[in-house]
Length: 237
Length: 237
Image (cartoon, rainbow over all chains, first blue to last red; front, side, top):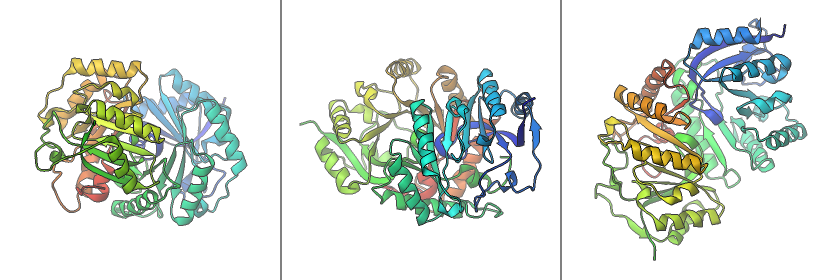
């Protein structure tokens, strides 16, 4: 039977970032990633520190209902990179839709899956230089064109840590000007404790200032991570 | 010649709330309102404390370009209630579209204008009990149906100050479940100085907690006012 490596099922909470920021949602976090971003805020999905449970789509649904009852109609699938999972993910998406649930998903855009066109709110988040990862621009272009051709509700999201990342974002915006671009304030130390809100708001102010002055970044959204503003670096919220 | 009563033209900045939160935009704030909300954060638009300038649409455009140069492609029209203005507003919207500008507008939904269907991002923000205002539910229903029939990209937004306002939001959501509903954290003292971020984040946490526990509020977004988190109660940012 087809199974998904799951690290976390939690919610309801709100989506903290990107195109559906603020939306009430549940989260399913899958294990495994083809990237190793320097500032990854979910390293436990790929660094071997935590073991995933192999769950069938029905079992994932049971955990969602156990946690959320009837208090949700949106599920966000995140990772790791959930695009590493083929058939079981397609089954989970179909199962969620069958229950009348809207499905959001985030991936870095390194791997295509045919089920991308079934996602209701799809975020493609290519990683800027500060991540230490390389971008396959040609591959990403194929992906963006396919999603556009299929009329998928999707956006591009780039976390910004420094001016080099902003150069990268300009290239993204210049390459796909018709795709909504979300710039997200990078969280430089996802292991920091305590009140990180003041620090993140100062970084947001910096990013807003950069963007408003830049005519190469007009059709963009600048957003913080609401969950980090609210709960610092706590997990499961 | 057709003129608009204008109190402020400023930007570029980011939209601080609602359906296009984070979007880089310019603002045009019109004078005059048919409401007198207790907690209005722009009382200067209706309390006589400031005089509006009567500008033609061309003059508004000139001020937008003077402030924003080529650094914008979105303009948000706010008030006061900009729906009090008929023909000159229709002309301004057409002029902005002619320049390739996307147009957002916010109104409480007390007055219909035919140009509503031309707005790219339209926020209808009925006011909850804490405002001291009454809602014309039948009139609002006609408005929502017209907007839906015309395929307008619109949402409902309700600022929430207390549990009575949340009851009101439940009624809004129950009445028009297919319309995206944004709940915005109320700013109880828009004249407060200094650092209001910590206070507003605590209120956001309260509102998120209420919503996640409530199965009558599933397809909703909960959002803060980013501009207030960033800049407190300063104007013109």
